[in-house]
Image (cartoon, rainbow over all chains, first blue to last red; front, side, top):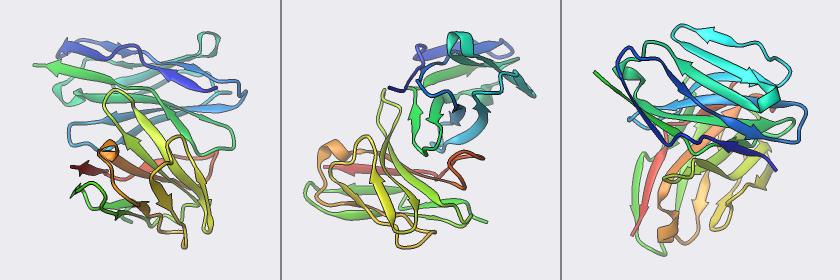
Length: 114
Length: 113
C-alpha cells in the first residue's frame, strides 16, 4: 500500500527562521514520484516540486530546498529565512509509476509570524 | 491558456439535491481527476480519467458520477447530495502519467445542508 505521513500538523516560526517540513512515504513501487504543494489561505494548490525516485539529488530553488533520501523514505522540505507569505498548508504527495493517482499526506500548516 | 478551470467556486445544496461540478482544461491533457479535501485528511481521489471515454473509480467514489465525453471536460455529478459530501473539491489534469506537472483547479467549496 502507498502512504504519505506528515507528522507535523502545525508549525509556528518567527520571520527569518529556517523551518523544515517532514514527509515520510511508503511504497512498494521501484519507480515513483514525490511532490510538494502549497495551499495558501486563498485555497488553491500551488505546485512546488516533482521528484523522480531515481533522482536523489537534492534541489534548491531560492529559499526552498528539498532533501530526498530513499534510505529513510523521506522527502523533507526546508524554507530558509521564512517570510510571512510562506504561511500556508503544505502537502507532500506520492504517485506510483503508470498511474495518475496522487496519495496526499494530511498536510502541515505553517504559520510565520512577523 | 487558462489552465484548469472549475465552476462554481462556492455552492450550497440541500440534502437530496443533485448538481454537477464543472472542470475544464485547455492544455490538451489526457489525464484528469477529481479529489475532495476534508479537514485533517488531505486530498482523496474520487474518480479519474485517462482519456476521453475512459473513467475509473478512485478511493472515495460512492455518491459521485463522472463522464469524459471530450478531452477538455470532466464534470463531477452528485446524484443525491448528503451532508457527508460537504467538502472542497479539486479537479486536476496532467499531460502524461509519468511526465510533467499535475495541475489543479482553484477548488469548489460545497456545503450540503
